[in-house]
Length: 336
Image (cartoon, rainbow, N blue to C red; front, side, top):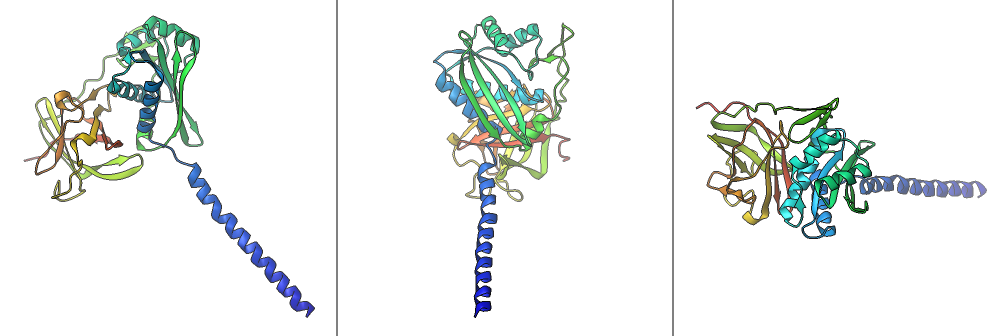
């Protein structure tokens, strides 16, 4: 009887330990998933712009000064997109980039470098700005945190301190490639080195030849790190115009009956074609309306004018969600 009681006791102990171990090992994965991840870079920029709009008074004069990151290309992208978002809202007055570049060269600091608050105040006064925008990107164990800050020029108080973790997706990785240039580089191509200011002309862009450029396989769009059913099937170049055709299918007909890529014209906003070899060059759809696009029996398209170069990225906000084609490369047009 005593041996049976011992066996029963040991069995009970083992069962309890097994249950505890099962609970312990099943919980951490869900906790890890809940604590990891972030938002896309474009979402973070849009959120920061919204907060800046809310905090600053109507008509406030604001200047985009610098963004501290490992890459000039990344820094320029953040400042350009933040500027575009604030211009779209129409509430604030944005200091012209050329004015900022001239002051930046005089102080000889980099677009992607660090600037102290005292220098920011002095720069703001010289620009006649009431507020100055700066920011930074920090890597933490392979993840990235973006910080965007607005400093009041008059009293040196921080009026906005936006921070968010962002996804280390394809766009972020592409923008971080290349690092910083030597000397102080501005958006207009001006560089300072050793106290001497020189102007570096932008590289001569190769103008794409007239014709149709068909993509096989079709170029797929991404929403953050998730692929979506929006594909660039081909691009047509005619003189000064470039039409980008988009379809909802990877293969087959461009736009099957009853299945549109963009269901409502009004849901398409913030369409931007960016020259990847000259990131400060952004093209908007023809007719001056960012929501302008067209469709026919073959597909839907956006038409741009005056595009030069052969490497681009395309971003579209559809139903408040950002879609992005990170790289579009034009080779040679199709043969007839």
